[in-house]
Length: 304
Image: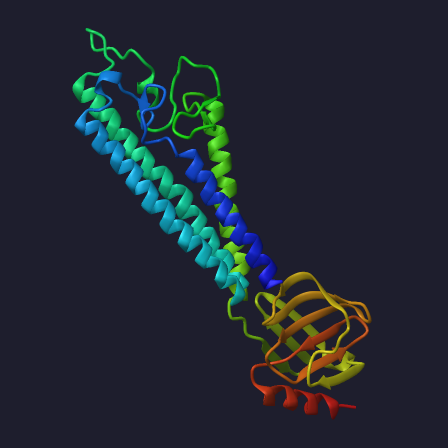
């Protein structure tokens, strides 16, 4: 499973980096009368300041994209060690990569626009712009006179941009931000407990309670119908319905071909494993402390 995910994300990262490379391939070149998405009169296209900013754009894009390609591919190897840490690291890398490249290119776009205004290029005798660069001066499109919500994105070749002078564009962006941020927070909150999980076992009075990674099972000792100890987890055809399932642990709600629904709190590198069955529950659990399981097994086995 880990190698399958490794290959999937490895190829995905290559495609993501390739898409960004193609998208920004002409950003530092003089294309359609523009450099860095700013209209520059042809006679000034070779101006030293214009070329300096354009050259910097090409250089920083190359360095940023190449370094993120290496980091992105390197992160895939974390999956072979811990899938949960990999997912968190992957989300962070993706956010930094997408946000970082956008920030770098918008910053350079603003510098080019400032240079154009400083030199009065593309302005009429009254100082009015002869093009629509002012609508793109922040790196985002803002034109109250344009009723379109989506317009061709001059900052990213082949893509579309929102017109932030429209109310709907602001609503779309706000909704997307809430969804993305909410999804990341939800993923971190849900996955964090599975990073290096520990099984906690408590026997108190007539109650046995087992919990790990936000899951817990509580049963009455007097309801126990069967108890058995295994050196390793029996092959009962377990499949996860809710929880975490890796080479390191099986925690949460599972199904078994032989027994149906069951609760699992098993760390795969530790033994023995205790199985407890009641009329309503089937519970498998172990502990990092092997003597704890032996003690609980002896204590519960001696009960009438």
